Length: 114
Image (cartoon, rainbow, N blue to C red):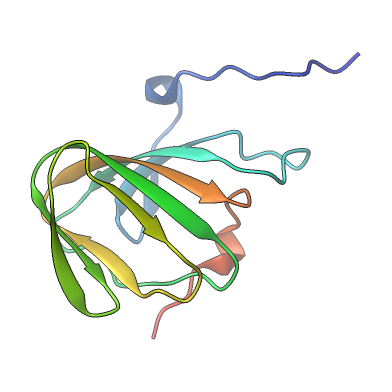
């Protein structure tokens, strides 16, 4: 019988490189198309990118800096939340630690660069 829940400790997941820095991704499995959650450590020179299908919700946990959204810089600090819709070119500026919730579930083939 399959369980109707999953539990993960983000700090126990292996870090993987991403356009923003390093991420730990939970619930990225073939049987979960709904959403995933990522703990991301932003490097200072995050790469501008966008998604054609994913919506992302960011929650800033640590650090202060900016989010560049479609070319406009917005100041961010702990407890700032950002909704990033498909097609929005985005990147974080500064050293930040964030939680990222991609909806639907993260798809590595939906990262696009100009």
